[in-house]
Length: 146
Picture 1 (cartoon, rainbow, N blue to C red):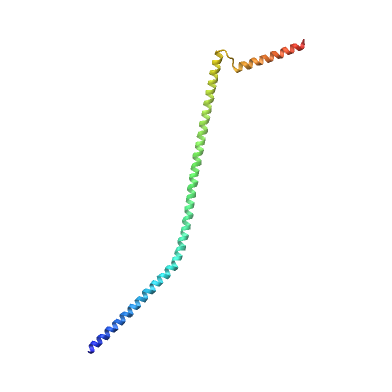
Picture 2: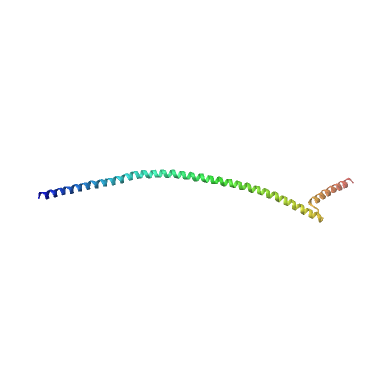
């Protein structure tokens, strides 16, 4: 019986040792979890601040890039606008020259047609009016001298 008592005593001691080991491991696991939580809270806020700084830097770079692209687009628009304005002015001048030529040709043909049917031109009427003025002046002079 003594073997049975010793055996029970050894089993009881092994159970106590295992239970103590489990308690130690459980405590270590608890402390590891608590430490991880504390470290995550501490480093998490620092990491969050770092993320904010990185975000601000990226935002600045993005704004600068957008600004550069807008300036480049505006420059291209101004260039195209100036080119179009120049082309329009050139075409307008050519059209004006052509219209002047057409107008002069039309005036010449109308004057020629009117002259053929015996209607005097503006120049003819002005010349005749000048002659009448000269004759009127001579008549008045002759009337005064008498």
